[in-house]
Image (cartoon, rainbow, N blue to C red; front, side, top):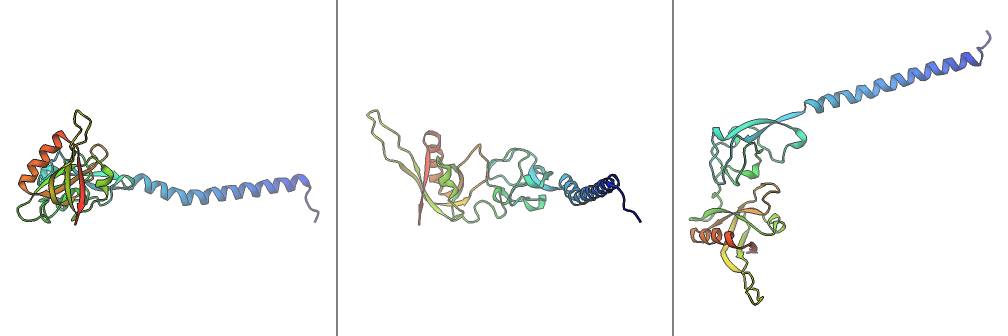
Length: 207
């Protein structure tokens, strides 16, 4: 049987090449389409605030709702059901629609790990990097900057709280960096609150 000419061979090669291209495309689609479909529908329930919530406020049903979030946008430790937060206290001021994570909710109450008679107060430190190295349970002295006199002399910082216990490091976003929740005495709370209105605050870790 005589073999085909060059034209027939070229036609056969192109047919097989077309078949291979089609098969390759089918394999790629078979592998990619499930992932694409999964990405399009891959959302999950996240517990969010239904209204503005202030620090220390107890979460009730009216303050909570569930929203759908893309999985890539869900914060670490996100809560998924109202039962995980009802009866707990907010560790930061939260706007409506804010996703709730474990660091923003204190199931045992903000003062569960505080010394007897202490009160909780959110403090915004001037150095957000310093605040980021703190952890619940740490003890700090809170200092208020003394400012500069008319002669240019720098006044020493004033200690407005001693041995304050860090209760939480709320994740309140870039708008208010450096916020820590501290347990202090009632008298110190008045000093810290007043100093925060006229001075910048810093914290020194103590043993």
